[in-house]
Image (cartoon, rainbow, N blue to C red; front, side):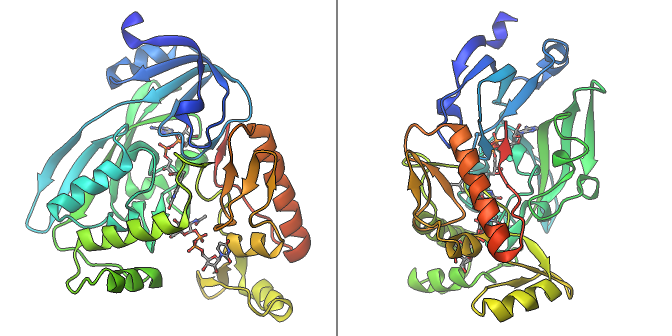
Length: 337
Ligand code: FAD
Ligand code: EPU
């Protein structure tokens, strides 16, 4: 096993964007998927780590942490209108976006600058600026720890939803996603439905739309809104935006006339959690090294040496206060280890 670089007692601080300092009992950099059958039998507790940008570490991690370093982007098919890319799970998501926009292939440009790996993209069906990864995912291939075999799920079998998929439910802790097949288009349909994109394109003086221009606009907006984990520890949105019934929303609107909403269906609306949290007075809150970002109340932050348990406790207090004021139960987006 020495060729696998197995290391005992390694600090995970450099490997999670919250910058939480806890040790992993064992740590492995995995750059060869053929080793998965051998690893399967080694440890009972196995944890897969991509970019560590959607996890909260609440204590020392028992067992084996596998850092996914499977690399490679291969064009496996092409026709007049589309191109199919097989992407190894350890490729950085943003590198894939840059690769696609460089070729002029459309479909994921609105998802520029999302941290983490391509293999984690299907897990919560990453989304931003009016687009979700599921729109470009053809299939997902994973190693099943219990079945000890490689399985490929077509898009519809992944049961994608808003920040959701089968990998967070039936396949939670059972699947190591090894590669994702993306279908990108050579004739991009530009999605500028998110108002801020139009405005940013105008400010950039863009007169002719392209995947590159949209990615550029999205990157500018993101940089102005979200804290850079290299500067302040965070994991992006800590909670999901809750979906409530239109009946419940109508009641709330009477009491809170300025409450924003987005239509989901005739009977459901989504409410921005950032607004709910801000209304409860949390925006810019700080206690020791934990806090709520001053520009984005949906982002919890670590100013330096916060412990995961302190961030968890803060998130509990936020859930409670939103529940008391609005009767809405916030659900955490980050995965808690
Ligand atoms: P990790 O944090 O390493 O892992 C997340 C979970 O997935 C863990 O439970 C892990 O065990 C599991 N996992 C990871 N890789 C695999 C694999 N190969 N097989 C099986 N399980 C695996 N998300 C959005 O959707 N939209 C955004 O706009 C967005 N913006 C963000 C901005 C910032 C500043 C930050 C820090 C985060 C943001 N996120 C956003 C969240 C995050 O980037 C995504 O959830 C991303 O997909 C996580 O990828 P990762 O490789 O870092 O996953
Ligand atoms: N808002 C406030 N106060 C705040 C923050 C937001 O009132 O402090 C309100 C405003 O009304 C604003 C609205 O919330 O118009 C929406 O805010 P924003 O555009 O910043 O988006 P978001 O709903 O907070 C979601 C995703 C992000 C994604 C952006 C852009 C979720 C949980 N979050 O954030 O994804 O980048 O939209 O599409 O859906 C992530 O998942 O980690 C993430 C960063």
